Length: 408
Image (cartoon, rainbow, N blue to C red; front, side, top):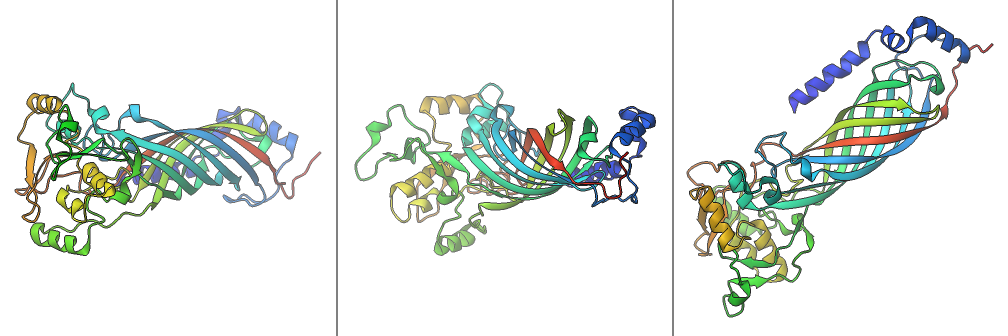
């Protein structure tokens, strides 16, 4: 992220110090510029970078394409994404130009992020990194509501009224925003302690210790945060036991509200005196690793059922570890086609002597305690990022006036 911010700072600085002749050369030289200026008047005030005497407001909106970078990705690296999971969004904004190059914009956006281990990895190109993420079998979707305030710097100066703005301009922007997010997952059909789903789970239901329990809300999209899939909702006693047994602190519930930093570049084209067509590409750097509800380690699944086998507890139990949601045949063929030493059997602690099989998850499991500390995500090493590509239309409401201008 430091490299991204450094590069953006260099671009912004370069744009602020470009010679004034750049826009004159692009749009026909100084003579044409002077002729155009005579038609609208000449400015007699002093030159200032932030000129309060030249301003106009604009409103606009557009459509977006969103891409997600996080723990559910083709590769365990920061800028790895699955283009097939590009998802739509839209935005509306209010903008003000207040100087030769400078503008500010208040922007509201809705957009969806989505990813799936099974669909992203597939079964054709397994290797020691991605096979375990396929077996991990996690997925999510997250509808993002974002409100941001950004500043914009144009590469070509324009000190006249809005109608005389250049046909084309390129700009960089950055600022601060806040998002509301709530990652959701799709409830599977069954909760089970088996290593895989057999061909006929119905044959193993009922009795005092059923191997398969049908979930009441199978197929629904539910809030993963409410389930506490990485132990966020465990009791104080359960947390203390984890600290004693595993020397590991369980995470706290993550906030649905998060700060984001938008950084991007764009170009706008003048369609009419009052309408611009724009294209933007921007990063949203976040301060959370839970846009996808995946970050840390697996937890003992038995703890989800400590307070009974109500449906909510069973759903949390099932969705914390989805690596058993395969048929026995599929599970066997997957492990045989790759390797088996990284698909570990994890014994729960002595109070819950149930054996759970789970995939190693994101990348490489670490350390000698991998049998109980299999990674579910990257451990918070990298916060999640999303990219927004935007096509917009801007309508200029009108210009201010140039104080001291002379019209002939």
